[in-house]
Image (cartoon, rainbow, N blue to C red):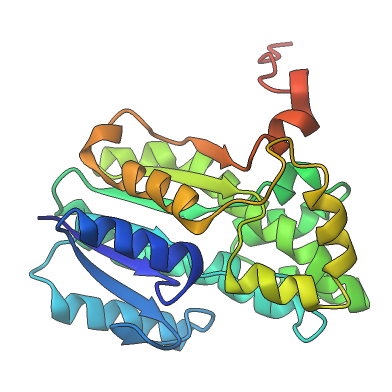
Length: 267
């Protein structure tokens, strides 16, 4: 039996991942705002510190996997700052805080959650993603604020791109400690978060139009993403390091086609 820690474990992809792992006999420590083992807001430094301290108290100096699944979507009732805090800084703070426990685990693995909005939504602010990667939350917030009522629309793909870049650029560092680091980029998945988006005046029309373009002809189900996250956390995926895998019904392939892979330019 392995021990895994999951943020966003109360609903959607997080809950489905928990169910998948528990069905295989593993122990899962869930973190969320409600209805789980550790109830904190991972969008705040205090919440992350509290979560990490609670995990340390529940385990014997080691965990075998971590999945940062907690996330929030664009909404008329949210600020870009909230998305930046939860989607990027909370995920990374939790990962870095739990890394010492992971390093002591059995074939440890960490999974971050990106999004196919990184390649299907045009013209999002790269400078916001770069500010996140630089650890400059104040600068990222200022960039998001500059978009006014479109702040969450712009912040979402930028934070998810920063997550993908982090997984890619930091994976060699993590594997030196024995930790496999990868990211999953879901498309539209039927969860409480996306159901909320389908009712939100800021995003409802865009979601409807987006769903009509998915090559698979439908949105995804939480368990379809969760099963792959569970695979990446497990011992069968030992050669996955620094990968960003799209689980999105073919949307990324339709958007990028022959644009990826691209040749490494040497001069």
